Length: 228
Length: 306
Image (cartoon, rainbow over all chains, first blue to last red; front, side):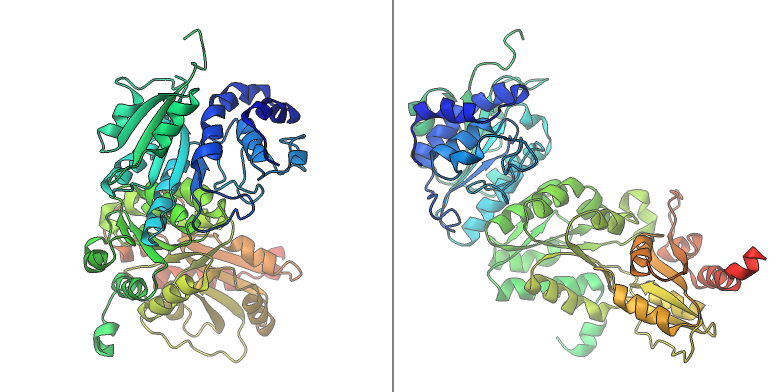
């Protein structure tokens, strides 16, 4: 199945849905669509190609938009969508890479995707691969200290095939004074802050050629809690 | 390197030599360090900078990086003192290696209290119990320095998830006594075989030395129990006492048996000193083991029921 962006709401509503996860699910929708529609070099017919680009959804909660995009791009049969989170479903509220074609990491616990992406980028570089590694994290997820370990090391190791995408919906309890991009810049990453709903801005930030340093793209979307 | 020189190396030095050789010969092998032992790998790191990664004092990242390397098709090895390699990065071992369904080799040094003068922060009597809660890890506790090379090389070549627990207090080469009609079985894990052998002199027991403790050698234990006059077993482990007691119970579900589990106690002694002094404090020295084992073998169920 190959669908368009306009098909995504229908695919999302095919899932039983989980109201608790709904806001964070949609915060990632546009970035996910641009990645799978315009950026990632991947083929649902050959999902284990060693030369494919990798996308790690670190912020594994709220995967409804992820599953919808995977269905739209032919990785997940649409018939799997109803019953998300049920005992017999391959699609849980946090994705499992061993159960879902196209899912590169099993996630759910925060602060694991970026460190895993560092290892994957290092492993691909050691094999002279030209594959890129993209990892999506949330601004609140950056609260987990494991991310800081990865941010420092990725820059020192010069992992320039690595791109971190931070979906910023202002949900971090204590916030990031000075801005999220600054946290990456100070360690030596190149950074770009974009409108997380603007497909052209997202695409440009994710496809620009970078050499020598990892790249962080902060995609700003509506605040999770409008009363803050 | 001549054999004579090899014999004098410590387990940690044998680990460095073996992993250096694996890095030179197999382009899939990668080593991730968190500063510990980085100096010892400096030369090979210069030759293979993309496969010898020192992430600094970041053990969480060390374990996660191993997971990522494995996801990219590499064969990662990680290494630190046992408390930093295992308990500090437990969640990363659980989720970034086992739950991702990828493999790695973890090689620790320091054991339960090799660095006794460093105190509790550098002790790891809990490491094997923690790894035991994870899915699909093999656990190896070599007794002798000479076991280390093959254990590491086989673990790396064979695939799978392996935890290899090295110690600076290795046992010397020991010839086990033979008993024609043993009264009981003493399972001696890793380097405990040295003190167990001395402690059970003339006690007429069969000593079953165990290096690979997960998967547990259930068949060997069953065969040893079948050879013995009673179904009395003593389990001696160089980490928390009873860590493998559930494995003994599972191996002998259909055999009425008595089990005495010896090992490191749970109490934080808040003592420094030497490893030998900690062995004595936990009853793992020759005198302590002999006292516990003779007391156990002398207290048959019939006597206690009477």
